[in-house]
Length: 242
Image (cartoon, rainbow, N blue to C red; front, side):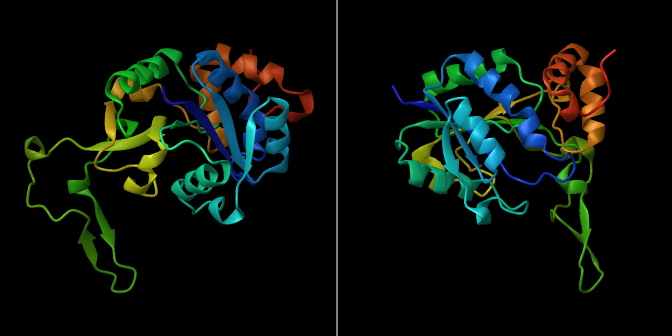
């Protein structure tokens, strides 16, 4: 049986929510451990505070090179350097857990594991309905100022549009030896999709700005309150639970 390894990336220096990763770190590790099917948890970070927290939680720590931790860097180089530095098995399945994803349903992850157990895909990812169809998207050339269409298609009737999906790393997993076959966002032609309806996608919350914290408190008040009360008083952010 291949190993299942949970990978938690944590860049230093969050801008929208200062100190975001340390504030949400334990919550993420708690969820991963609750699933009960991971052989180990690897935290790849350039944040000394997160590294210390990871060591305390008995996670394996990979010190992430700074060039893979800038906000403009794709996630693939972080996976590649981590896999090489730690000598992870080629057939190991690496599950990506972004700390700012505060909604997680264990049933979704067990369903994804069942797909891997049965099909052994090279990678899997959730996909949600695209907010705007690419056939409708335009851009402006920065040099000429001319407008251009992102997709050169003459299809104009909505009923003629093919389905369009946006990837979401809510659930994402890749076999280590498949890293060469995916792009910087860890997706490729052989990625097995897990399609979510609009209603399923609506459940998902990612904390990027303080307004997202307020949304979390509003939509999932019990879950938010548990997290908020567990924080030291001087580190609490967001509205006080009622």
